[in-house]
Image (cartoon, rainbow, N blue to C red; front, side, top):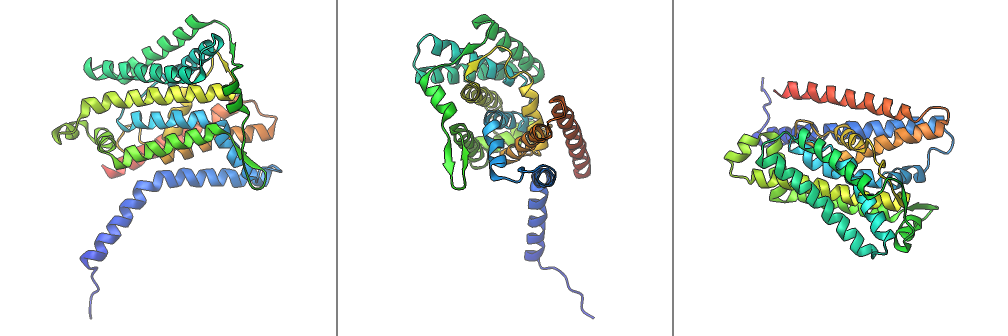
Length: 334
C-alpha cells in the first residue's frame, strides 16, 4: 500500500495560496458585504439596480475616498489622525476666502495643498521627536485647525469662481447615460498612486514594517523616524486634496463642514480590513469600505422614512463587528 505525500513544490504552492487567501480575506469579506447590500437594495427598492447608483457612490464620496487613503497610511503604521476632518474644513475655508479675494484658482489650490502638507508634517514631527501619542497630537491639531476656520470667517463663504463651478457641474459621460464627476477621476488617481507607493517602494514596505513591529523595523535598519513623520504629511496632503474636492462638491467654505468626517475615514479603513494595530491592510480595502458607508447612506435615502442618524447607527454597528473580527483573527494568529 502506497502513501501519497505532497511534493515540496506542491506544499509550497498550497502554503502560498493559503497565505494569499488569508491576506485578502478581510477585503473579500468587505467586498462580499457590499455586493450583498447592493443585492438586497435591488430587491427592495425599484430603480436601485443601476450602474448610476454605483457610480453615485464614487461621485458623492470622492473626498472621503482621498481622506481614507491618507488615513490608511497612518493606521498601517499603528497611528491615528483625528485632525483630518478639521483640516478638510480649514482647506475649504482657505480656498473660499482666497477665491473671494480674487486669487487665481491654481495658486489657491497650491496654497491649500502646501498648508495641509505642512500641517500634517508638523504633527508628525511632534509625534516622533517629542514621543507623544498620535491621539493627543492630532486631537490638538483638530482643535487648532477648527479654530483657524473661525479666525478666517464665522459664516459660510460661497464660491463663485468659474473654475470651481465648472468642476462642480462637469459630468464625464459613459454609454447608457452613466456619468461621473472630475472629482472621481482625481480620487482614483490618488488611490492608484497610493497603491503604487505602498506596494512598490521602499517607503511603502517600511510603512508595513513599522506597523508589524517598530522595534524589528529599527533593527532592520529601516528609516523609521522619517517614515513616521512622512505618513502624517501624506495624511495632511490627502486632507487638503479632500478639502478641495469637497469645495467642488459644495461650492462653499464653512467652519462647521466635515464635522465627524475623521470618524467616517477611520470607519472606512477599518471596515476595509486594515488592522487598527497596523501592519496589515490595503488601500483598495479602504475604497470598498467607503463604498459600504456610501451604500448605507443610499439605503437611508431610498427608504425616505428613516432619519439620517440611522446611518451613524449602522456604521457604528458595522465598525464594532469588524473590530471584533479583527481581534478574533489576531488572537488566532498569535
